[in-house]
Every structure is written in C-alpha cells, then in structure tokens.
Length: 178
Image (cartoon, rainbow, N blue to C red; front, side, top):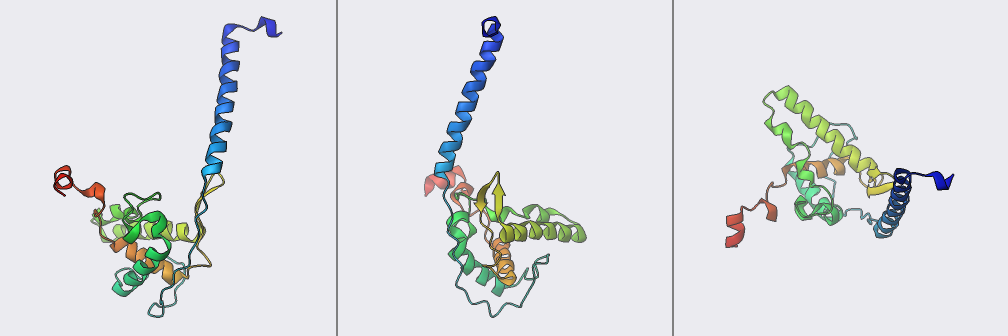
C-alpha cells in the first residue's frame, strides 16, 4: 500500500513527523529550563493587623499601616518574581498593580465596589492556590505560609503601589534626557 500513496499523502506524513519531533524537542527544552521558585516566608510583624479570614473584599483596603506591612512582606517574598516595590514592568511575572485598575474608572459606586471585590477574589485565590497551567507551576501556592491578614496586607500594598514608575513609563524624550 505504501507504493500507492499520493504526493499529498507523503507531504502530510512528512509534515506530521516533523511536527511531532519539533513538539517533543520543544517540550524537552522547556522542561529543562523550568526553575522552581523558592518560597520564602516573610519575616514581618503582623501584630498590628486584625485576625482575618480569606473572605473578600479586602478588609484592609485604605489601611496605611497594613499597606506598609504588605510592602515589607512583598519585598521579602514576592519581589523576586513581581519586581521590587511591586514595580513589575520588567519582571518575569505579571505586574500586580494592574489587577483591578479598570475598577477605578467605574462611576457607579456599587458597581465599582463589586469590581474591586472581583479583583480581590482573583488576587487572593492566586495567592492561596498559586497558578498552574498544563502541569507547570507558574506561581506556587502560599496558603499555609501566609496568614490571611498578611495576604490582605499584600493586596493593600499592591493596590496603593505607585503606578508608572518603571522604565517603560518614561516618555521617549524623558528617557533620552536621563
């Protein structure tokens, strides 16, 4: 039967073999380059924070002391992936300051609060359970290492961290003069 294959059949067979080999090669390369992130429990004093649960919305929103504690914890445990002081514009992981940014533009107070609650839920779920896609851990789970009140302090810090302080935020003229 192999003698009766058409040119189209041969091209498809050739393409299929090369596609399979390419996928296997890329998977092998990717698997060898995956690096585990060491989880470092932050050493911060959380005695000023009230005991909280994992329920959103963020109960520490607007609390300056919580944001300061969150900043210290963030720079100890999160900055290696998300950038020092949450300036994630050049980091390997997402810029967390962007979570919920669109909520600020919503005029209706009830709808804005609901939007912030959704952003809080996304943040806290990501912190608790981590991020995993196709069996690859992109962010480890922090539940058990971080108490809920510290996770909410992290959220309070991230949402108050200065926006636009990375190199990409500079205009071409400002960047040229520095």
